[in-house]
Image 1: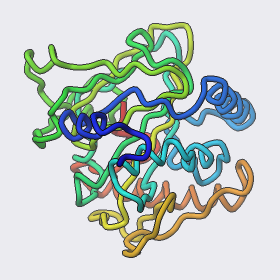
Image 2: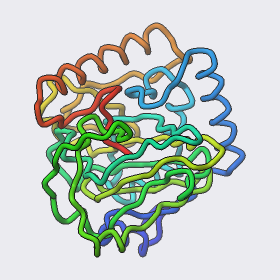
Image 3: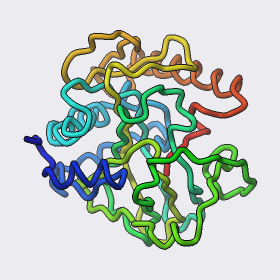
Length: 282
């Protein structure tokens, strides 16, 4: 029996490539986490798209280890879970920035498509007006060809875009979330997001979670954070948990990871991996 999801939700994930909304914390708990993150931004600068804040932000580490969140992920991946990547994804109010239709696993260098789950946890309302993600059911069954496009408002570094048929666009589902709710999506599901036309920041915490059997095919000595269960494979160098916000040790480890990923992106004309300015998320 599933721990957090219903059997119907598990079936829907594998059928559609995503499932939402899933409530994993109260709105008050989400508001408290948002307040801590925004206080850090006032002290240290923006956290939007910074690589792996779990290494130096205690609120990110707490969310990564949130029991209800991990229970839902376990219903999809099983009991052994690593966090391969994480990021705060923040759209300021009134921005026209968007993310074109794409599939994440085109870029990440991970070798097992069904052993990767993306979490998107809302810390503020994610609505159509604020630029929430939309996803096309069933699109995770096919790995589509991507092309580069040029648009200054496209957040993707090379404007990586899949040409989506009109009939598929008509089936797209907006992922509307209240603070404290999350979505889970497959790394090959087609998704996109629009600008934030609301008066509030759209703040989300994103993680890409994997089973320990997954291998990295591009970056040497890649790292991951153990969240639950046992790593019997050792394909990723273990990451430390932060003892305080912006500690010297956590920031140094994070900077080294960001440099390694940036070098891999610059050396890879396909742009399969992500760094601070080249994120493949909505």
